[in-house]
Length: 117
Length: 114
Image (cartoon, rainbow over all chains, first blue to last red; front, top):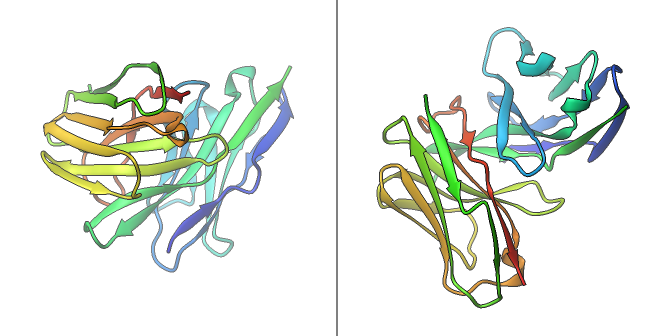
């Protein structure tokens, strides 16, 4: 079964410093990967997704992620964070559910990014 | 453009009371709909999903049920709430059930069971 592991539950970083949020997946077939952001007491918003093609994916708010098949990783990066980036970030993989014949998202447990002024 | 609504935004209920959370989507037809629960430190747990009116799939056996009485309406219910039902409930929609379909989330409902 496909799964997602977010290695860090909390990441503190100073404002204007770079950040990397780690995500590893397990899969023996083609994967489709997503990063979502959740601001306090709000729903999830799509940051970016990898479907195929270039392994470097650019998203909103200056974030990017790199798909690395050999390391089964999809780490999220930003070269310079702002206070407004303080939020929880979720990595997800599209998983086929044979019973329903459809695809669903399996989420990691999330990484809380705290940007320190 | 499409929008997704959830209500209420917050809810405090006693143990043993019933529950009804509502989710509606605007600006699209025949969406796939999802209910997730987010508990502290446990990420998102898919509870139910629906590919059409009256079609509900349950991911986790529990105290909750879901219904889809109309194309763009998805309801989460319980007859008797448990303390363990507390959490942040998120509704989401997607345009299809393919492996590349993006899910779009509503603002959520914070449920506290006392």
